[in-house]
Length: 192
Image 1 (cartoon, helix red, strand yellow):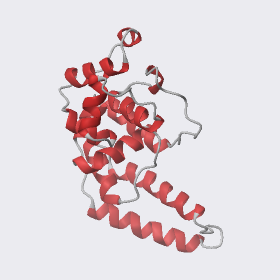
Image 2 (cartoon, helix red, strand yellow):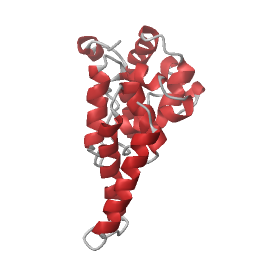
Image 3 (cartoon, one colour):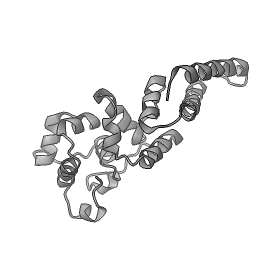
Image 4 (tube, one colour):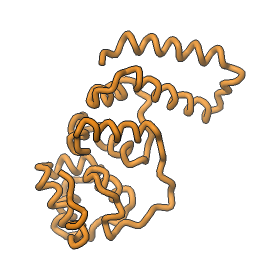
């Protein structure tokens, strides 16, 4: 359940967080794992035992899980580091909306240890994983055909190879053979 923007203006960040957890029946422990903090830290934020976080990373993770803009927290200061714009991340966000899932529902579809990584992907702090099995899991959850996900994976791997010094001009035949082999393997092995 998304919080109405009108009600956010008059609420403290700790109240927004508490209401979100209650309205979404999200256990504080699950939430703590999703944003990469301890359970006691979440309790302290809600109880206002400590000031609400001003760390950009933490606020962006909280906002991603809550599916709101981080700027809606008065404590948020726009970070100096640029946010990664990745067409794959935007594609995944569109698919989450098309499937009618909230970010919390999407995150709960993953093993607990993987949720923080997915939050960081959704907030633009890291690109999609290179591990094909992780990409298959994302595709499976969102009912995305493997052919569509393969193209995003290949583009990601090409970017990584290029930034690592791989020269596609002089190694074009090798690159094409590698990706043809990978494409054949993926289409045979991953059932979606």
